[in-house]
Image (cartoon, rainbow, N blue to C red):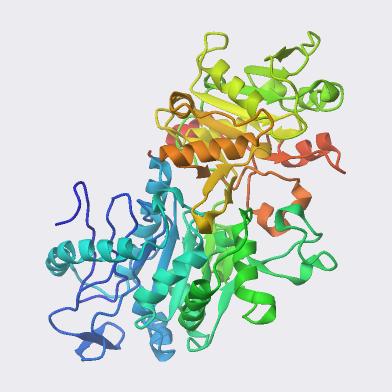
Length: 564
């Protein structure tokens, strides 16, 4: 029997050429294959089926979720597909069942729902390939899946590829996941397509793209990004010519051919990942696949796009994204956010004025914490001496003050550095998607020692957001700094990991300056924060990137149908 609380979905039909989706809402990801139908089937022509001993239990576009609860749904899709489209696909000999979709999601309510929408959208499009109803057939297969999925769950757990999958959302390395993908789909599929929650997919267009490529060779497909100058977030790789190296924009989707997946699975087994820090996963994945020229470089696919779905430029696209932040209802009130700024005496006259000239006015409750009380700002001395690095002692003093009667009782705590540039109005919109009664820790997620059982953490410079519940649990656990100058964000990550609490990533927070990110990557974002004043005019950067040019009217917000 399935684990308690499991829900099983199987829209499979012997009358349709649909991607089969099996998922269990349990705290482990599942590998999902269908048992062979009573009569083995293959498509001889679009919309027609015939008996064949060759298809067997081939996976039909199974969606695999790399973080617990991950499913999908979301964007557009026609109810029926033209016979001309199906004829093109058939003539190019690419069966929908040869494609495995991997939807990357995260473990809190909002991201589960986003992924569920992406899943349902793919299924809706696939059902449109042929006409007819499938309810009777798929119910019978649902019964078969009830017995199959627990077996796959045990099989995956026994392989123990990761220590605790609940704590590895994006940071569950794709390159570790290829071992699972190769084992489960290496003999019955041709492509692994990776999607993010916000990736809108035109399924027919995507199949046409993949049908043009020789699936029997090693391919690494995606929309290429590149650095215009060497950057700290990529460890200054290719310093002499950083633009020469291309890496995929995950939001546009990216794909690996099965021959490459199979080889990578062997490589991961023989050559464990060695990097201590995971900063930008898309760049690190591309480096590992390229392997100093021994592996394939990223091949640009113009149809994998990050323009808005309704843009005129999207007419040729197989994938698109939504540039607007998600509207989950009314923005969180200013009264619900308490802002803590970490500073020190030597930066009172240099960095604090920048905050006052840019975003301070948007925060209702804000305090500056320093090693020196300065009534002109004002700053508060928490009794923790300043340290050149780390600031763990100061951060934990802030957490304790947040729960005390010394400050207003708010639902959210935002901790930033004195050289963080941030848009409070955009943060208010984003937080409307999260439940403050859950232990939410939100920001730009980095990883440390992930391939050796490490942990994820919210990097401090881009801003760390905690729900009150998260702060309560952190302090109640007895989590402490091992020294005042310990890295506060990493210590918090270790504590959250020990408590089994997820760290939620948002690409809208940035640990570095705009110059440190690929131009095309930022082009489809409405960013929330950047960090560092080094070699820039911070006020000009704020006005260009973060000044509140994103405005959603109250009517728009009230009509938003995204539900938590």
